[in-house]
Image (cartoon, rainbow over all chains, first blue to last red; front, side, top):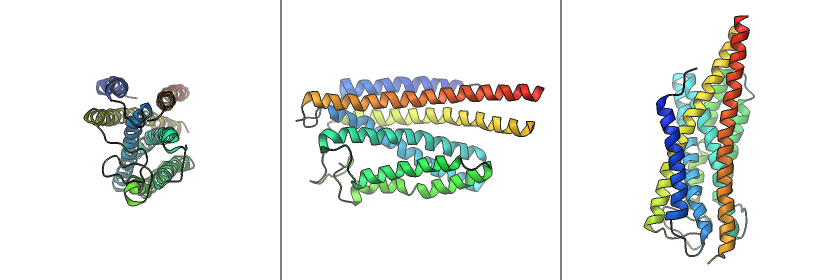
Length: 231
Length: 49
């Protein structure tokens, strides 16, 4: 097993520092929103985790396509790692959204198109990880996973566009809100700067975690190979 | 405007979720890595025998 590369060490330290800086920007720099008050600060991490969640699911689909073309197992490892990390971030998005919705919409959950499609995306990819575990042959598992991820990736743009395609109470972050969007607000330049900083931070955190997760899976592959040698 | 005390309560709940789930995932990565390394060492010893 290769030792951790200096680039990964630097990336890990950078991710930690960026994460702390993002928290500082949210609490010390971003101004209070005049209607929603402090709870609006949940928005910055809500949108950043949603961004990396969706990015990871789409990256997994791309890795799946590359696997189907090249049949190189490293793409399967990358796909699986991207799905697992995205599931964690997307779960955080859904929970943060629910916590934000309680005081603003007066409910923890509603079967609104955005919330419903987001829950479907989470369940689609969770099912993918569970189903993978039921297939022993690595080749079959990778092929199944690649096709599943490719088909499952259709749910991601649907969730993203749901607030633009359907009548929904979920506000549109980039674009025009309608009267039915509850919790919409106009962003001031410091709010925008904080949002983009959080998006950048979570992108770096995602890349770092992806690298660590792929290394973990490489260790798993090494064990599988060693077991085959012994048997 | 939302009541400040209520607003702060929900904001803290939101960030508590972030600060619990992300470290929990990191811990799971560390623990899984340790377990796999141990397993690999055991397999190496078994192969030597």
